[in-house]
Length: 253
Image (tube, rainbow, N blue to C red):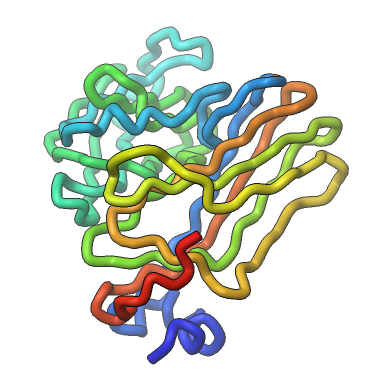
């Protein structure tokens, strides 16, 4: 069965896990305020590139609850956070950590993380670190990370079918989708766009989906040209078992 059939005729069945070996993922990210002249990943921290190097080796995660200014608070003691990512073999894994006072420590070794959510509406920021480096943040009241990053699990191939970007009114930016295959070497550009805040959005459905091999890191970044502004990004992918996708190199750009 070809990828075109999955995309054209099977979207609901894919989302319902009725198509063997095929899944989907919707990633959405937002940066609170990117400073003019700054390049950063579209995630929950302003003016920062995502710290992929924190996962040069797999390891456990620690959680700290803070106020917006970073001061430690205990208001969310007893609330849990579920973290979703990949283990040391790049297979999907998740862990739920319950906050005691203002902290929590996991037991699962993660090689990548790309989503987290809390068990209740969070009145504190949940800051998740690996080796002392913050790798996830749940902003106050969101109960969910906003991260336009992803890593294709082992044994899978990702097909990017749509990319969307918005920017706050009065600002404009260049937004770039970067990829790094096999988790080594430099990130390189896969798609680039310009966006201006005027009540519209950039929405690009790929006529031929872009193919991302297993263990490919994906990072959507914005470079702000004018004003300090909020920027959002979304992307949708079909995730297919390698043995269903064939061996062709098509779609790599």
